[in-house]
Length: 333
Ligand code: TXA
Ligand code: MG
Figure (spheres, rainbow, N blue to C red):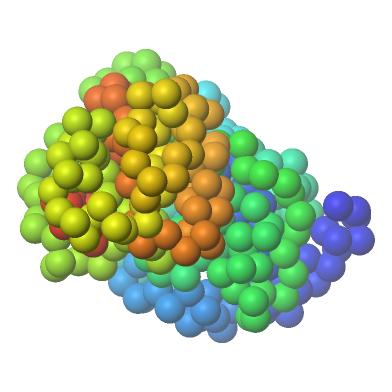
């Protein structure tokens, strides 16, 4: 990555083009936030409904006041503690924020990403960059430049090479616009970490998501093309023994323990890290790899019910609901 690449990216943004933008979470599909035609292009290329607003990426905390208004003190505390980093704050939008990027709502989602290339670009570009994850609507988020090119062989003017994403799953989204702070999307910054900084209870998605919806009524998200099933180790045994069809199915099994995995000839084992951070970092990459191998099904061993696994469990649940899992109500792309 050279200064020339950054200059080219800025040129493309100014001309209303789209770039692949590395961040610490996942790669984004970036456009100039103030260029309506460029923002329209993002929706078109992703095939994303206009009802799904976009996250605004800025380079400095001081820029918050241009895009948001009535910013609560908590927002500054959180920004000081976690920015640049994988936290997105939902705030009241200012008149400078185009309604096109907020799905016509009064609120804007903003973050400062912790990636040297993203930061250099944001701080050289006069303005802000809207960037949803660089994947087609409902598909796997990209954690490498190769994933971005795979998702969009055409339509992206430049993919900045930023290596493999350090965090690997999308940012925690925290709403600060109601009476209480609410997590809209869990990420690797936990509700406990947020509570510690603001000294106030944060409503976490586990509580918000009590309403559950039976599968089939909503599109799946964060999903590979191969159907995904989320099972505990004992459930897997029952599943494998349940029918002849299943015993003949070619299955990829993503497990924490290769030695304890059932020895079945239709099952190919992939070992996953036991630590949540390491798991998050490689989850989408492994999904891309396994997806390309042509299995009929991917079975993922259910991670522990521990707060550090909430974001991972959320993504796996959304990826797996097509296979008959019950899916939380929360819809995020
Ligand atoms: O880590 C991330 O957040 C990545 C990187 C590229 O920054 N971005 C990302 O963007 O995950 P996206 O568009 O794939 O997911 C953002 C989610 C969407 O589900 C969207 O509905 C929600 O944030 N969101 C964005 N703006 C919002 C708003 N104004 N009000 C409510 N939800 C919003
Ligand atoms: Mg997304």
